[in-house]
Every structure is written in C-alpha cells, then in structure tokens.
Amino acid sequence: MPDQFVDLNPTVTDEQRRRAARVVAAASVDARECAELLAMLGLTDAAAEERHAA
Image (cartoon, rainbow, N blue to C red; front, side, top):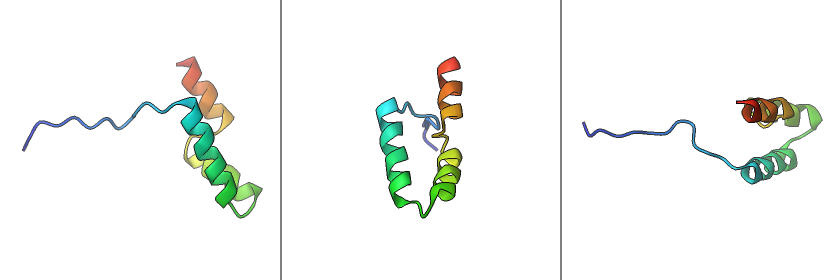
C-alpha cells in the first residue's frame, strides 16, 4: 500500500465559501432549508468567526 497523505481539511478561500453559499441559497426551497444546509456545510457566520479566531 503506497504511503499517501490525503488532506481532509483543504484550504478554502473566503471567495470560494461565498460562492458556495450563493449556490446553496439558489438551490434551496426556502429560507429554513437554506439555513440548515449552510450550517451543515459550515458556511454560517458562526463558522466563519470560529475559523478566523483559530
């Protein structure tokens, strides 16, 4: 088995996160679904604050 390192926490830019949030918002049925999906993906304001604090 070859020695391989898989980065499970790749670096994602703020721009990529904004774009992902826009895609989720566009595909969501309603605001509640959008909020739930954003939270699941770690794209909420709280998640952003946690990333910047670390």
